[in-house]
Amino acid sequence: MEKEKVYKQSPIAVACYVIAAALLIYAFYTGGNTVSQIKEYYGGYGISATPKEYVTYVLQAVIDPLIRAIMVFMGGYILTAVRKLDPKNYVEKKDNMSNASVIEAKVEDVKEDLAEVKEKVADKIDDAKEEIQEEAQEVKEKVAAKKSAAKTKAKNTGKKAKAKAEEVKEEVADKVEEVKTEVEEEVEKASE
Image (cartoon, rainbow, N blue to C red; front, side):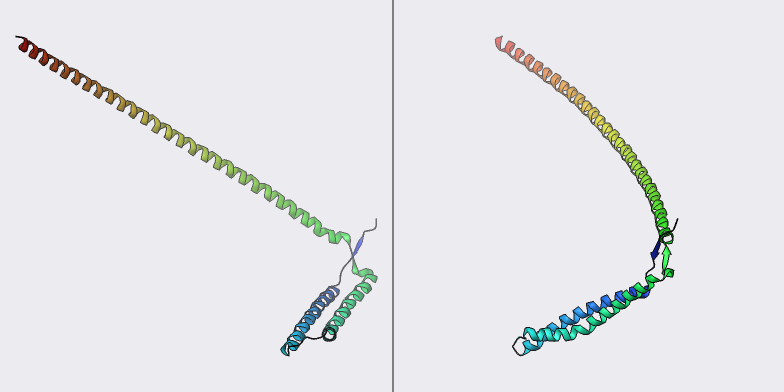
């Protein structure tokens, strides 16, 4: 079974592509800068430039970096094409894929770590729930104790109030009896 081989990119070719991209960006910057300079120059005299002048000056400013960008890109492309002809510039796919197996192993490690963290978080949540339930039970017990104390106090207050009412009732009955006796005595004295 023949192993599949993959082309190994040259760092010089990659550098050529990056430099070509930078030169292309510079060409666009130069063109925009030239347009603003033309507007400023002609605006200083109160007139506007013709499209022909814009095209002429912009092409003069942009053509040099644009040609250099194309040349550097073509250099990288030709270097890549020539290197692809040499079998030494190819590596077996297995070597490239060994990184994938390392990545897969790390992903598995991360999954295991994540599972452990999830378990710890679940344990912490369960512990917190238990603590909250215990505290809630304590609060309920305290509330129940205070309610029963309040009921007892209310009963005691009610008993005291009843006893006081009975005392007042007896005193009123005694006074009524005294007044009744006095009235009867007065009536007897008045009838004699």
